[in-house]
Image (tube, rainbow, N blue to C red; front, side, top):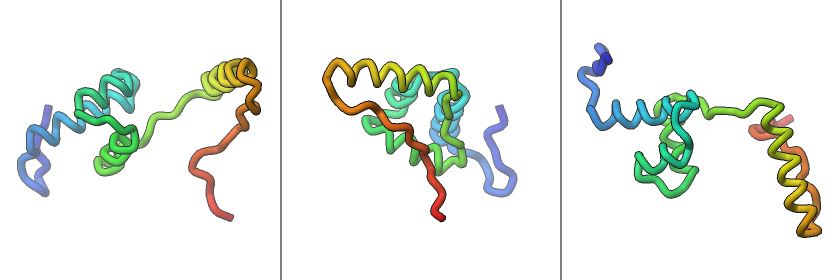
Length: 95
């Protein structure tokens, strides 16, 4: 593994390890909970901030997986007589 950036010099091993964990999560090799545990994080927002700092895009789920999650939430909320989950688009663009 190349751990140096010619423009900035050698890469700190702890930074390289952090980036490797974040890339493993982003590529589906590691679960979110394991990645957070490895990085010593307790809040998902911190994981997202670290990914952003490294220029790593947040993983997204497929439309099929999103449908299964929505149906599951609707079933659970139905048992509680709560309103059904409304489809929400993340990262909405302002008009």
